Image (cartoon, rainbow, N blue to C red):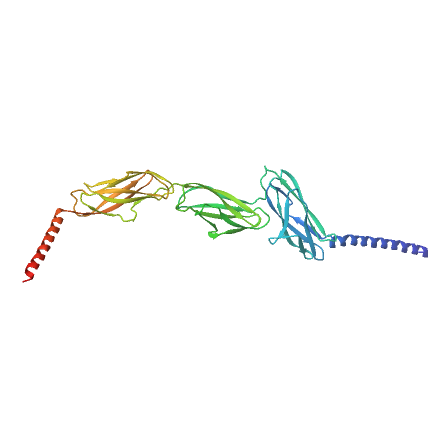
Length: 398
């Protein structure tokens, strides 16, 4: 090879080396900025959802920093439909920035989106961004469909088995509740019931009494509600709600409990003593009290008696027209022992009876006798006393 050919060959090799070096530099230049400046990713597992007007939606976001340096990213809603509002949250607090360690992918944030009640059916887009500056940024597009006819996908629910039940006052009813957490985050629900005053609602989970229950994302929990109806509960229909409330959800379900009528009356005396003193063939007065111990009014209460032969028993009113629930009314019984009755104790039964309830009161009557010999005896004793006084005066001086 001549000297000229050698020089030409060297020039060609140099051009090849320069070209390879330039391509390598270009590859490095294009790779390094993508890794250092653009290494921030904002994502979600469910970017498209069907919702309804008035919903409160929780969107779980994941942030990944693939760069070799830590980043502090600003969080913003780049685009929201008119009337829609939202906030970024973490650890139950609103946030606007997030710190990301180098080469980390374990950071999560929740975006809580409030959809207005009057939002029309249609397609809606939301754009969220994370921006750490120097080109390290990402924009996430979310798509929402409002369709009144569609199932409410992603909406957590509180349901009850046998929501309408009947019970008497003083009884207890049991309801089976199911909490279905369809959100992307775990929820802790506080449980309550706005039952009528005096009613007692007790919640149990796995036979343990609880006031709240935790449900993991996408899972369900069974809760038993025991509802105690007080003894004095009025008959009738009672509608009220059971509520399960978490930090960002309020779930309700309606119960319909009808308290059926319970009928009970009590026949007694104002003092509670069931005894009477009377004299042969003379009218004695006994005051009675009829108590309505029901949760509803009792009408047409008839009074009757069962007494020894030859006795008479009468009432100032044989029938009580009506006694309201929990009320009472006094009546008077007139008892006359027969003329042949001997002194001693007797038993008679008084009865108060309606179409729905009845009660008996057993009265002990102590009969006493009054005779003219008693008066004669008193006169004889008085005469003897006077005679003794006169004798003492006459002969006492001697």
